[in-house]
Amino acid sequence: MEGVLANLGEKLRAGVPDNFQYVESRNEFSNPEVTPAADIPEFSWREPDEEGLVQFLCREKEFDEKRVRNAVQKIRAARKNSQGRIDGFFSVIKRPAEENVAAAGKKAKVSAATDKAKKSLMKKK
Image 1: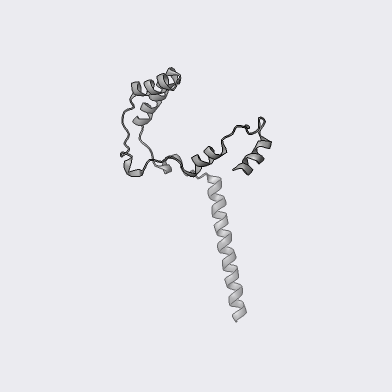
Image 2 (image 1 turned 135 degrees about the horizontal axis):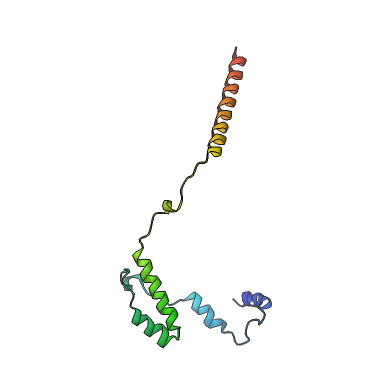
């Protein structure tokens, strides 16, 4: 880690702070605090607890209350819309010119294959 930070420090305007805690930082990456999967309750989408979110985010973490309430409204709106299939985002549109080009390409391939077959037969005779 020290080698990475030494190289990175040259590219940062402020550099790596002299009091950077290398050992503690390495430990956070090597031994992250992880909750066992068995201890995590089953996840399900429910109506957001707006007042609980405002209490936690605004009162405890000093988020802007208006922005939090707007985000909750967006979540509510998103819950009303069901997720569509990916093919619902795409449609095939064939234009007359494209159809003609595609047909001409197929005819050219068939014609070339036919000519090749004729030449092969001629050689055999």
